[in-house]
Image (cartoon, rainbow, N blue to C red; front, side, top):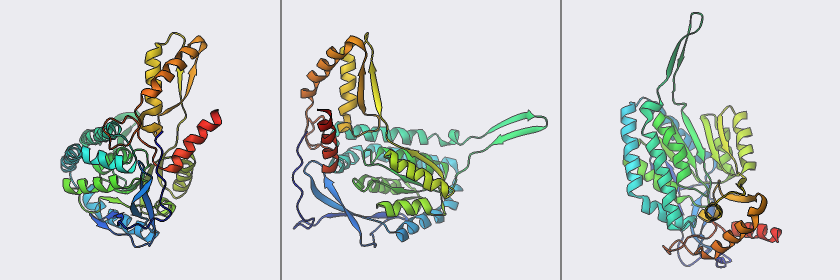
Amino acid sequence: MTELAERPASTETAVELGRISHWIGGRIVEGTSGRRGPVYDPATGRQAKEVDFASAEEVDSAVGAAAEAFPAWRSTSLSRRTEIMFRIRSLVDQHRKEIAAILTAEHGKVPSDALGEVARGVENLEFACGIPHLMKGGYSEQVSGGIDVYQIRQPLGVVAGITPFNFPAMVPMWMFANAIACGNTFVLKPSEKDPSASLFLAQLLHEAGVPDGVFNVIHGDKVAVDRILHHPEIRAVSFVGSTPIAKYIYETGTKNGKRVQALGGAKNHMVVLPDADIDMAADAAVSAAYGSAGERCMAISVVVAVGDVADPLVKAIRSRLPRIKVGPGSDASSEMGPLVTREHRDKVASYLAKGR
């Protein structure tokens, strides 16, 4: 794995660091909490930017903008919302290379992985373009004596998304696309490790005609998360991240009367049976384990070889590993980039040490 360069002892350098701020009410709003976090270039380990960390009051400001925008947005016709969703989809597709470059710069993804992430996000936008059909309700006559049942789908109001570092463009698009197409307004809290993609997406949504306040981005840490979970005007929260934090999000959010969707980490097993095609199984194992440097929810971490297939499978996997070209995302020929931070690299290295 590519070694990361040593980080400077101080984050203060002769070069002014880029600053990443919030997006509230249709514009960039600089943070006022006085707290910021570092954003590193994974290929070098050096700090490239700094991101504002929101205070509880700044979260309140974003929620207030979303709440103010909600009545008009939910009253906007489905045809108009669909038109805007198609524009968003078109703009994201047009700017896929720029978004991919942001992912490479802050997450470390190689170009093929970064472009693949954007493509998966575009698929979610395409799905949301079908909102006129998705919003249809239902009617059942005489479900019981003299009783008919109607089903309707309506927006909830202000909803929030808390997204992980490993897919900083795709996972937000999982969440906000359907939410705003339905007529909700949205507050996004992306990972502080790679926050720029969310800000770029916010600007594209603005260009597509999303009204001010419908989509907001606040950056930060646990302070921002806790305010989201306790804010009385936020009706629902969607989260993707580690299992311990998913449990915390679910327990805290539901205690405060919110609908909560909390997706935690996975432990994925690949089972290879004795009659398996060894080359196909080895290709699948290597792709699943090393794609996106293994930083994805569905990465294979355990391969169970049944019977006599173990030795030839291990041999086939071992022969493939030296052929993976490891390098920075700036090299178009790189097949696997660095992990997002030195801490993540050290954690993975500790697993290797335990396995020896």
